[in-house]
Image 1 (cartoon, rainbow, N blue to C red):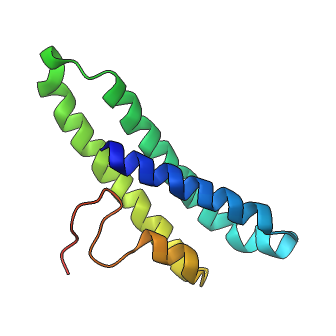
Image 2 (spheres, rainbow, N blue to C red):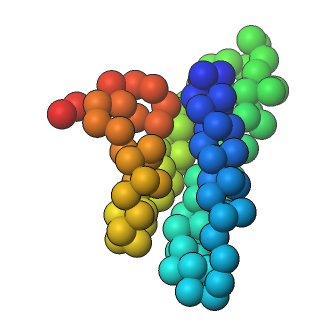
Length: 111
């Protein structure tokens, strides 16, 4: 999980650099939907991090299903980011989110 969070941090840094390079109303309009999807993804990762920070061995039986549910939600958000990037025809962003064979969480994807 920590590796996934680290990859997410690197992707946020990459996105921040890209945003810094974009200018003009056309780009802001064009990428608005993508950024909304990305914000939803980051919020889902934040929620996972919050739960991980409060893991308690005595409550693990309650927390494990919650983490699975949150991971599923984050995966749905990740898919929406990739789909939006594809719709926006932004190949460089899409490639980092939909690398063949790997989910955002580092698990193999069925091909």
